[in-house]
Length: 234
Image 1 (tube, rainbow, N blue to C red):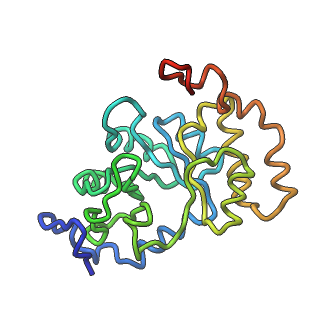
Image 2: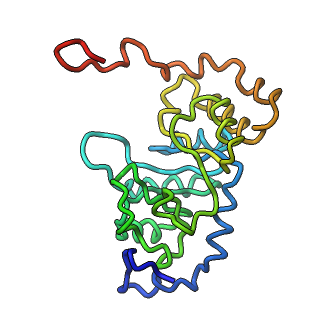
Image 3: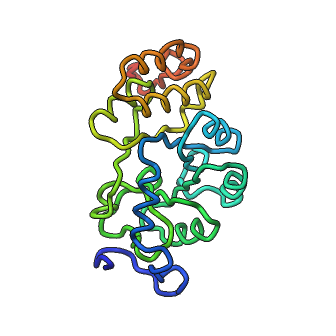
């Protein structure tokens, strides 16, 4: 069943034996995330906030800094996994099957073959059949294996979350900027409620109420716009 354009692993029998986690189990694992919000975190405190606010899963990422983005520190992933009762996902670069091997070896529940960490390359994505872990990735990398559809990017308010759910998405990803607000718990909780009740305007009104303080720090202001060029262009 392996794709001719996929990276194939040959050296590790434990990983290449697809029977250890058949496709039906991977499908079931993906379905478990339906109707939920997955929150990206960079430390244990954020992970605990996400879980307490009702996130269905956290995705651990490397703290954003200049230079190349890579998979997060395995010790951080293990610390978060030990502390939480919800599934833990972690990011690996597109096509970097060794990062995926490492993540699987430490017991992550899902691997995000992330187009954020590396440019999408549909000719060299990881062969998912060589892994027991369930993968989450962009459509091009997922191909015929796509079983749930999550929206990512620009989900800031409960109304945003309900919009993509009404358009047919199965859930949402929330980026780490959610923790830039004064009350990240309140904001994540409101979006979780919107995902769960996306067709109920009264519930959405309730979830959207009183979020001004929770949204502070997330809106553009003069101090948050980076000026560049000689002509004061923004």
